[in-house]
Length: 427
Image (cartoon, rainbow, N blue to C red; front, side, top):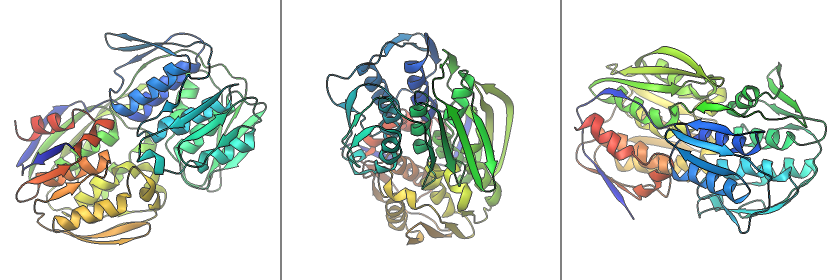
């Protein structure tokens, strides 16, 4: 088991391009596998999760050619894999790939590591079964017997872009129209990429419900996509800049899709100083450079309702920021955190208490009272990359040394995290 040792830092400064977006790298690979010609992906994320998607797609027919700035994706006829498709730790790989496999005349078994094997897959199995696929298992491993599908109208029971994307990708080859309804708008990378690849969709709002529909039989056009930086990875450095006493950090080329920028809404609540500039667009995805400055005294904040899916992955590190806010910060409506790579509600609360913070948990979130001077502690990641990185940020503002045990988990999304953190804070 690897460990990462973090000491207190005085400042974080400079210009920095965070790693490329994990969600978009997954989707670029999958869209390249179903496009009508060769696609180019520039600056893709190199991580264990992205590699899991690449391996699975290569096992079903995609040829990935490595070029100087990324990949050329050569699609071919899909075929059944020779063995089990190993999705590693990646729930996105398993859930989105299931939609693609279900709509093709092949059988495949998808498995994952111990963490992924605990995560619920019945939430995608149900709509795929309604469309006509045969799906065995509600937790990994799952076996999918694909074939001809019928379009459905499906209301997602929870806010999940992975469920929505799985259904839409299956609907591309289904007969008729496939419609997904959401009570809370989730990240829309799949819809934006479909539109950029020439697939028409109908997107509308009916009262509080968000509805997206597409017709089966559409052709996905090949594309040339430069993957922007990942705001979820950038968030660790953004929070570091918000809580350290001397900070001015510019994060370059960051994806600022409105469905992903909830962290900036929380910064506004807390009084963190930030601004965006150099706005541009990459295949329908808005991109900008973000500058964060230390804001002095921070106000408490509240996360709940429709804000949750816009920052679900950033909650662990925002909980760290809450320990430095003057008052009680509240996180609610976030029970989905309990079925991530770990039970993030318990892991965050356990780690913060070990560092001296005042935390009360409930089923769907927690309350954190600040400000408090954190103290160094030994933190177990429980195999969860975001727990490891969040507590590395906590270590920057703690007295004494913080040790992150199980830091190898960080490789799933951000292999260079420790090196980059060192360069921006200690070098």
